[in-house]
Image 1: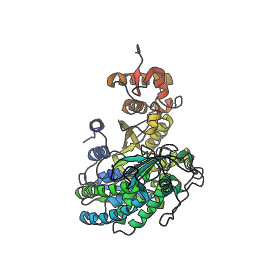
Image 2: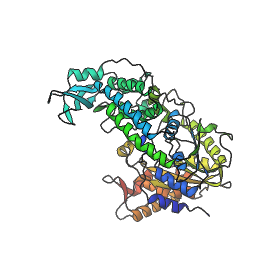
Image 3: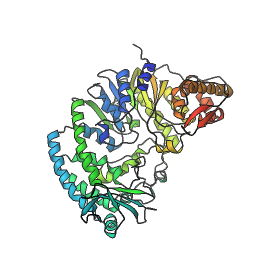
Image 4: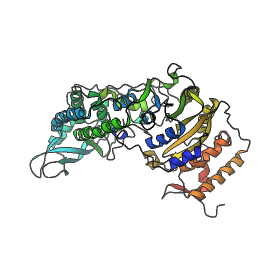
Length: 529
């Protein structure tokens, strides 16, 4: 029976995309995709026993959903870094809940003894309190912090604050002896706010680096050390110097003003207890999972790894040029958890001078991966890819490359999500949310080449844009891209022509629509036809 992509898109539109459940709440990973959208793709584009493959494993959503008891597919994932593989292996390991409760209770008792590092004097009741967070300014990485507010709890209240005193300042900033963590030098990359000879310790306060050192030592002595490392991994981005919003988009970045030092013991204890719900969820949903994890660059996948014409469905989220430097982000984990990363084989564009990761190399490698993916897919099987970029030349390279390897563009759909920092700063030009592109394996696939002039193409795009706005009301830039315009451009063979004149569709929107700053959406000009 032929697959109806429009019905699948309608199903996707009918649900609120989420990555919140006891499984995915238990860890942090950048650009984690909504599991319930993945569920729809798996359910409608494959059947029980089929192989579902993700060449860029990342947070593992594709594989974890495919092998869930609901679907019983066979999952294959490929990844170059330790952390994503560690996530899946840990989540699917056999854990006795009662034993975990016993072992974790002992660990919680041990780590509570480390609250001594956060002890403080309460001027209101005269008793000892525990610092919950400190707000401070730190103009540069070598400067001493200027403490502004000390938040703490004591017998007076669960929420107190006071000005800094010498005792508080000393405990936060003294030089501690470190035994279990290697203070590594980070790869310099100014785009990630990492500078020459910067050490991992410089994105933490001295106190929190010491507390983490002590926790790592305690974890090594427990039976479930892998589980407790996993839980520690889920909070490391909060343990470093962060901002008031706990912004985790840049794991190696620290602010200069209104910096926050959090109480790690409070964070870790809460997560240890919460992991009990994760154990219950896994026990109920993963009784006999069938999956294979490959640790290598997906450009090196062989017939031995995956047989040609054996895969029914690919769902993947490749790196978007230089938008997310995954392997460089992984530097946060190795000193504490011994999870290694692979800078050499990563398919990415990087501004790090030492990496030689150019846009040309990126597209060459991605083209090779598309060829491999096409070879692995059965004929008429689907390749679903998350991809977002406003640059029309990027879209043209992408679609052209896929078509050259018999992956024919079918359609795409926009999936909204909460604002990213980039979207808040530049909502007109940013593509907030996700976009799923649908391609089908078709040995006879050819890419249409339009014969219309650039003027005719532009008129058609303007006409379609106004139609969409009149039909659905004011629309954001990504909604216009994903819910009709890119499909019109690709299906008619206009993309390669249009991208030679315009960098993005925003340039066309600005000539014929009005940007409403209050709602961050495009509206039609008055008296416009």
